[in-house]
Length: 106
Image 1 (tube, one colour):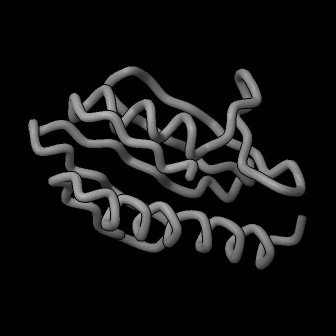
Image 2: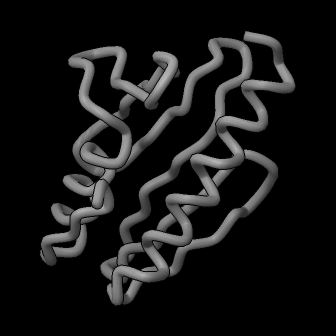
């Protein structure tokens, strides 16, 4: 995929994540800290970082339980490890770090 397509797709994904987290009702500090980087403060001092990695054309997610790489597969961002969708994995990470179940994939 061309770089501008990658930037557009990741920008849409990051903006969508931020909107879903804002609408979740959870006490999260969610902010785009730089171009292509979204930090999610989980209230307990922990953070989840979601960022674009242009060199590999992936979205990377880092949280307490580890790091994850996601690749575009023509309809969704899927984990390079197990094929799970980005929002499903992110839901699990946010739920683990906040202690409150959230489903961002809806």
